[in-house]
Amino acid sequence: MDSSSLRQLLRSAQQDEAEAKRRRLTLYFISYVGGTIMAFMAWINMGTNNPLLVGTLAGSAAFVYANVALSHMFPRVDVFYYLAGLVVAFTINGLVYTGGLNNTGLYFIFPLLFIQIVVVRFKPAMVYVAVTMGIAIFMLYNQEKIVAEYPAEHVSRFLIATFCFICVAFIGENFWHQSRKEMLRENLERMRQANTDPLTKLPNRRFLEAVFFERAMQDPGAHFPLSAVVVDIDHFKTINDTYGHDIGDEVLIHITRLMKEAVRTTDVVARTGGEEFLVLFPHATLSQAVKLAEKMRKVVEANPFVEGDVNHSITASFGVATALTDTNLHACLKQADDNLYKAKNAGRNRVVE
Image 1 (cartoon, helix red, strand yellow):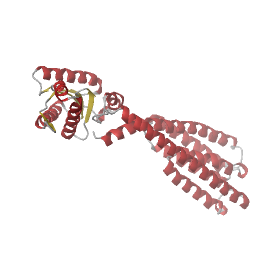
Image 2 (cartoon, helix red, strand yellow; image 1 turned 180 degrees about the vertical axis):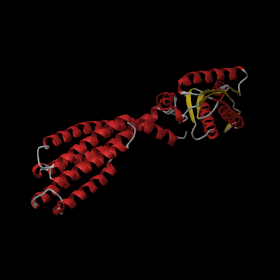
Image 3 (cartoon, one colour; image 1 turned 60 degrees about the horizontal axis):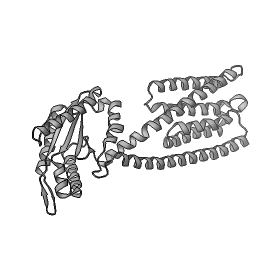
Image 4 (cartoon, helix red, strand yellow; image 1 turned 135 degrees about the horizontal axis):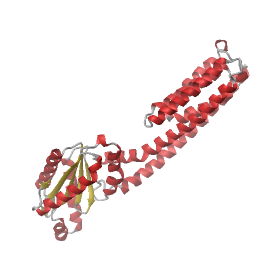
């Protein structure tokens, strides 16, 4: 996993759930309140001589309730937000066409447009509003084709007020989105610093526990079987004692580069403390993980650390284990750690499964 992949994963972990929850709760609230109001309006208009208005309101309310019910069943599906925008467009133009009660339907356009702007994502909402108002304007200037009758001065003032309302609503939404993006960028940078080892720039233990493992538990099909390799640099204390901690830090950076080059782009190399690393191989069997670990071992052994007068050969020990499902992930990590100690006790510079 490179730095861009780490940043993307942190961004999605930060944004997705909060934004999805906000949109989902907004849809639920607006649907229940709006559907109830439309159903009530349909009921009180049942005694009038405008059955088309009653049908429009009742049909819209029924569709809204069905849409929100399905969104409860499939909370991660975005199509329900766009369907809500469509039913708003239908209701708006239904009110324009029928006129509502005594041609007062235009008064309800403003809250309905705001619902469309809030529920649908910002850019698609611009298209929704443009199409909705385009149809409405066509009907208002071709009243011989509709049931309602609006005085010309009412039409012009309604359109001016609507245009002003749409501009203000979109400007407000735009500034809200911009400020939110800025806050997300700041939060993302803080998250990146908190989840990254400052020396090697690798993900740290906090990232593994708070982000990666959490994702793996939520979406096991995309991660398991998950193989873990615990890596420990052999005789690292000797390097620090002989050359100093500055060279020791450079050795850690050197080992980091070698391991990252030896693994796949989907794999995660993390520093878990001192001279110890944890490498995670999503969708890798035990035999595949052993081969990858052996590849890393050979690469490390074949590339001694060379800087100035220092030319020091380096080896590392590897403990490998595989979790077939999310239920035995923690047991897998413990087994990999136990296998590392077996590798060290057996003479180091080897892979133990």
